[in-house]
Image 1 (cartoon, helix red, strand yellow):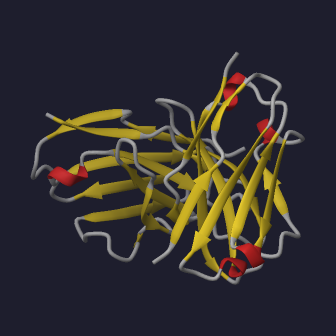
Image 2 (tube, chains in turn purple, orange):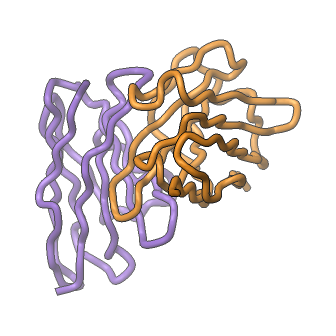
Length: 108
Length: 124
């Protein structure tokens, strides 16, 4: 099975900060990498698919990059509504998928 | 508007059974692969199972193989997850999720719409 490892597990940031979250796959997954945002008590929301394609309706301050085994989610200027937990997910090993353990973005 | 509404969660004893349902609306269910994804309390997301548009293919995470069965009724716009031989480690919120790949023979693996989830608690 492909393992997905996110870092850090949590981070503290302020409104306006640039935030970067990393995700590493245990083997190459090309660009089959998706990012989700989850707020407490809510369902996850797809932010980015295919490593760098923004889902419709997602603000442009979110961006994704990477290929192979190393990926990054960047929030260019953190907003109040961005405090949440973020998950990466590989969609390479069809039809069985795995998620990273999550990164919690907290208010500093 | 796409809507997915799960139901059927509750408290069940270890070894027991439960059947979850997911009512879909606002889109043509028969065109999409669908999945169940779960989240144990305070933990991360775990993909559980998926099913092809016509129900002819189903796949499961190893930990539920032989115990869980996913099915669908496109005429009734519904998905199901039959869970047997439940264990404490199956305790989680179970989400119904739509795969974004419309009318494809293989799932894309990115989930563009989710339900609100239903909580399953396995405890004596």
